[in-house]
Image: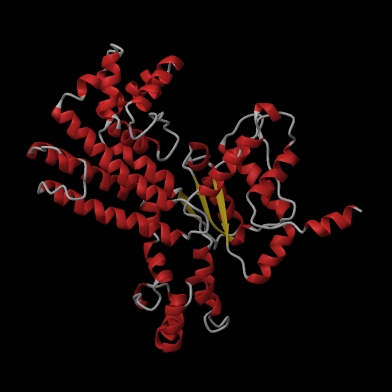
Length: 416
């Protein structure tokens, strides 16, 4: 039976009392196995059944975060659409936000860069080296003999977020050694021909530089316990950097592109790279429209003392005025972590503000946790452990993704 973990995170907003009750109900969570079709309707049924068995209510649903797959985000029969339809039917006054994973979107943005003419020769060169075992061993031995900085080249894998940037950087660092090895073995390759072209080498250096910057952003977006507004700030900052890079490249200023700076870049090439960065910035704007739509709420959450009262929703305006007028709360805001600050607000005087903050804090901006759980599942549910049952796999995933420490002494006493 094929086991599927689909990339979806449901964000729920509870009070502390409701959360305690919910955690008690969720002692038995369920790992659903889909052995047939995996349409949006199938996924919807799994989610609804899981919510029913876990005792979760749709009126507390804050958001749905997916990886953007058609079965999840389809306009007519995707999971998100079906979930929204059910919410409108049962709770007309309630609505749930939906997001496309911020890490996936950042990774997809690089498709706007026209780098195929660079990537194809690089990938073919890597494949020529690594596809045959003997040739691969000879190449590694060659690098060891000449005391190169690296001992091997890396395979390119589209599904890995950082793969393209790492492959380009490694091949750039070993470009002279690769050409030397191909000449020694009399291997004909596009890479050896392209590397002799000054324009192609400039394109190659630009590709390495910009992919390094994209990888840095992607790395910052990864990790647990990071709030949605913090991740969006990283994206906004990178968009501002892209604007600066575009202007500087137009002026043939390559300060922030260390490899490109070492090349003799013509005005035409500088303009081409500037246009590519402009297209990349536009792609970022298009893809992150779902986060842009609630940018004002992110700003209110992170800077309640600096926000414009008139732009806030009506139910928050009076409480924000009281908040901004209280200097002791301002000092508390400056000295405490954001979550602790909102938790310390008076539960009656700032009821709406606490509810708003609770909803914003539970939002998932990425499916990083799902990706991590899927990697763990692949390690455990392998062909060598094909008899592992779904209930046992569920227990393995619970242990591997939980921060809880078992009370072994109590468990041992219970078994005696």
